[in-house]
Image (cartoon, rainbow, N blue to C red; front, side, top):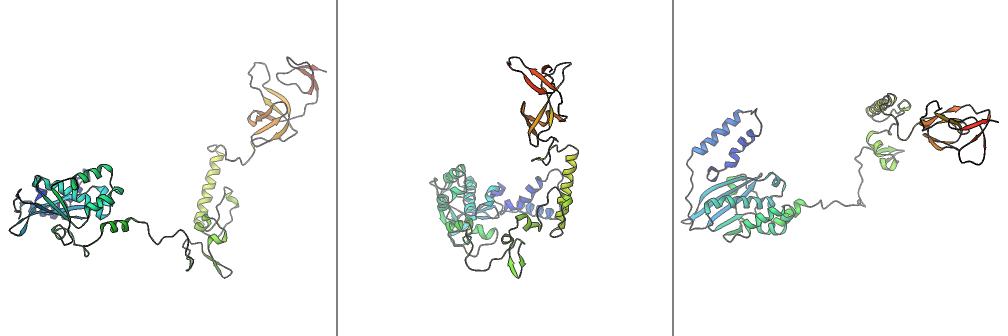
Length: 378
């Protein structure tokens, strides 16, 4: 029950929680000793608090400061309000990114739950600087999950013994913890809208009047006229580094302007890629920079057969090449063939041969003898 009667308990013990999260090697400083002595003094001091009476209504003053919910629970005795308990609670880390008016909802709900340990269902009047009910009904759904919304509505709205009041004057929870704000009166809905909206002065189109200033570093003066990089037709890379993109042909790079450090980096990368390609780590570039065969149309080649037979030639042909690409060639007899199955160019056949195959009713005259062909000299 220490946090219910020690003023500023959460802030006083915050450094201890931070030390426990550091792991095994805890660094203890002279400043930590001073904080610990102050905490011991608060624990040993006699609290100036009044005993609660369940027959009288309770007043709970709430304030949120730097992610900590502060509250003062008091009752009126003889026309004077006397404190019953000092409440303080750390808000959830997710709520630290919310607007202050949204944080006030979470702070109020947490402190109402804490104060129920002393009020036991008695009438409770909550005084805050924020319109908690209006914000919860109109703006909170954009920031809170459904489960949080139901929880806060059950605590703050659906409770018959709870009354929410907007107190425009300075409450005890403010001057006890932190510095009071200069302007206490504000509209929560307008403040949330102002804090979360996109900048109102941003437009999709440039202003028709006024001077345009280029801050990308590409502005330069040509023939006495100031022009930007986009007007000159240069790429974003040239705007950033002052020179075109260098290709892998590093030996042809003769640029002497712009950022020379970038040029050295690009040359180093190009040399590394070339060495990897020569060692076979990068087997092939995309697209191909060179042909993998040295065969031209009208030349003759041998084609490797798919059949594996002993004492039988594994190469058929020769066949005359009709078309070539970087990776395949085309012959009349075999169609398109990958370059890995080609041997050549070979000499043009000189002898005429008569060949025939099973099922044929005609003889074919051609030069050369293929691996799987039947034939006899003419």
